[in-house]
Image (tube, rainbow, N blue to C red; front, side, top):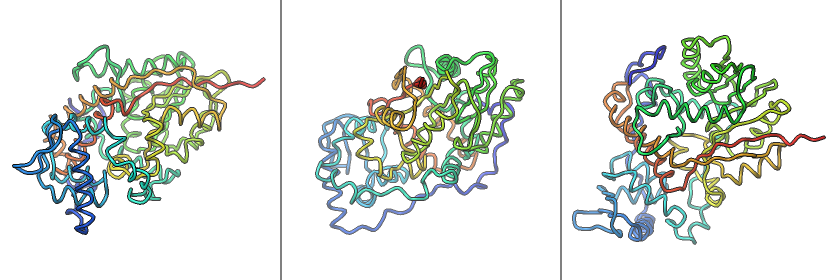
Length: 420
């Protein structure tokens, strides 16, 4: 796939330091702490349906996908120093690998709740890294957090997404799917949301989280008047160009704005996989904002990635590999968390819910395979080998979450409880 019409040309390789990720040498760690980490990790891996190769002469595990630990000393030191962040960093550094990376990560996701011994889980606050204060999703922090991921390069995303440039779960008619089916599957997802929100001719629609504009374009083609907001300057530039190319500039306004600063009344509000970037501290503000902006009788359609409520409660304050390298400030809600927040802080109630986590696993597989196929082109954009391993791990890690059922994705319809 080539970059879409109006996409900016590629930047000069090396012009953006964030594209050259690098990875630090394994941390210095006391022998005692390294030994404790090795004991815990060995014990956990030995009980899993994996084949873990530690040396040419030593395999542990119950049998299954191969996890090849090429530098056990560095692997255990990284985990001893920073837990699961170290586990991901060790992959980035090439200290372990797997012919079937998704298979290995799916096994680990299946056993996420009991990988760490329960006594240590109760002491998570002592050993687990804490999220940096700089990642708090204030208006300024949100702008920086979003820019970290979405302003990397429009050209990068165009290499592995489909022609709709949709960066969220598609809805397929059946599995397995081919990459050529992604545009229709993405439109199916968008149409479900627009139908749920009742979007048609004359609808005043607000979209929170523009992406690269496909939903706004599709809504405007129905006759809606669309205001769509994003914090990504790169996304806004390309979304505006795509809207113009579609001949819909008179129906779509793309704003560079925080959701908290939006004003007006809207018949419908849609948001696709954006609440995950809001941060738990601001979930009440986010849903209160939706409540404030919704006109009487209006409808809200959200697509949301969720995690189990018990895992959310256990890990909500832990600093994760995903937060450090991929989505600063991000946190997935649970179904129960959304219900608690809306009940406590708004008049909004969930009236419909559709789950389709298996479709996200398939979407991620297609993205991951295309990313691997285009590795040379990713390198030509200036992204180094460590960055490419980081993104391979991110896409595989996410796919495994959905394949295991640890993660889910839902479309929610929210309406307001009107008072007499």
